[in-house]
Length: 336
Image (cartoon, rainbow, N blue to C red; front, side, top):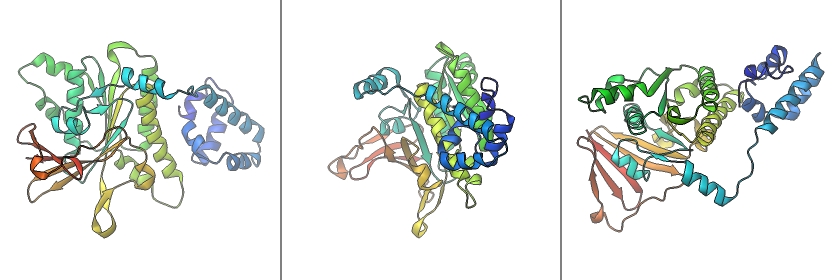
């Protein structure tokens, strides 16, 4: 669903006056409209000198929403869609792929949570490189919110002896620097518009936002609900793109101090329900190791073994190893 401004040409009642009224209430898109109290919105509209014009705009928005409703699907239809259209994309890291039973799932939003220097960006860069390399001709969109995208590190994941392959990988990764949530909405809505007209080898397979929390945290302050509404809208839009266009979404989130000083994911309880998959990265600086654990997964059953002595170890890239914990499910230790 698009920003209100993009609807003006085809819907004359959603004009600049209507948009200004909506903006005064923190409503910039159809998603924002859905998240607001419609009765309160209508009551405020009644008090405006141009109330009839505003109500016509409201009716047009409802007609747009009605026209975009998806048909109800039964369980077998959903299963068939998942098996036929929702592929699993390897991240390029054998251990994380094993944890996720293959990698990042199309149609789902996966979140990496961890403190600074825990390896979140490294995973994003490796996933971007691997998808661009394995899904030849398919594109990766990398939304960089903190100038952390590194083409040099991408190149390290590709065999530099194969110059042609490196060129193809780099040509299939599109990086956009974004420093506020409103710019991200514009980028995503433009991307959605482009994808509706795209088919074939140039389709987007993966969207990465590194990091989503740096865009959302600045708007969550204060007593109003506008920031939370924008946060939910961002999550909803990313999940909608993933589902409707059969692509995977990977976002990163930082940690904050929780109860008793124990770190917890930022963005609070409201955001907690947004990701389909949440991986927690924690760093043991004393042993120079990073642990990756599944905190939430909508379709994977954690692996369990009977005794600690049976815990398998799988060699990963460089000097990294995967361990399966018998009680806590699967997790990864990366020794650097």
